Image 1: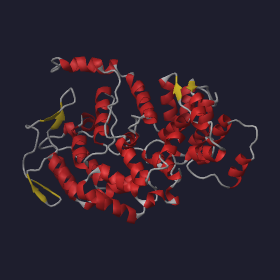
Image 2: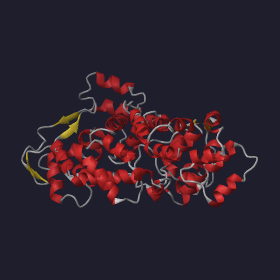
Image 3: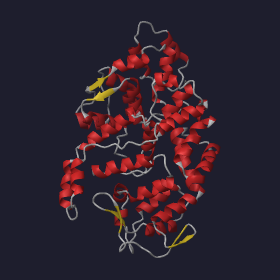
Length: 449
């Protein structure tokens, strides 16, 4: 069961004990295949955008003022979309695809206040999350959210804007040291004239596009943006860069260069993300003890892992967003173009106290402890408030009620409980499974995946 739990914690967002038990008779290959099969079909995630759909069904040209009114009118639905995304993460049967969508959202980072474009962008991430990286990267550059965020829509012949070209090379594909300043300048010229219509569809403005010869990474010709992506992906450095980032996210923040090189060899052949992830999950080293229970959960992982044990629901979407912000990761609100750094950055003196008490806050009518500036500003006090959260303990009883302590601990905590912690729980007498589970989710070990 240990390897199954590990795989699903990293490749998905956990697995219930009854589901894990069914997989124990399968080979590793069969388990990985089943995980992959669950994401064969991709379901878009949206909220009610019918007003936008009606607007774009008619003649919307020249109606920018009306479009802006529509944007303001629907701005509050960002809360609804945030809640829908967290629910999808916590419950989706397309678990691998949702995990990859979350990964790519922190790789190809955007922040967009126009909900219509934001939903478009995240669904594009879902569509390509396990596809061809070359096609994926080309679509990223043509998305209105990205063009607004990194100013591609202001990039024109004679006065190129280098923002997107720079981040494409530095953060999205190659990494520092694998390109020159001249490469940035030439790439920027290739992306001139790129823009989008009001409905988000891509358009090339030929009057603004530079059709002249460019010289990029040793390739010379009348290159456009798609050509730039193709040339980038021919570089082995691109495969190494992407595989390093995937390794840090899925395996270990301490990178093993030999393992990354194995991944890069696979990825560089065809840039097929699904094949790469299959190789990763089939590798023996993925299941090494040093790679199990060694990563600090992101706030979203922490929330979803509590949900996996006891499903819960906020009565007010604003409180859910408040908790995400308090923990340091609110969906749709990345800090900058580099995204969240992850790892130890998730933990500080404020967030650790909150994280350790989060399960009792959600499930035991507890209070949020916080001395953070954000909490004081939001609540006008320094300690606590009750969140309106409903929890489904009957689901817990069905899934976890029949487990002995060892099985309960293995299902809830990624690291094995050792020493005094393990002994303490073995000597617990008179406590219910519900109470024991709450204690398990308050341990430092529960903070790890």
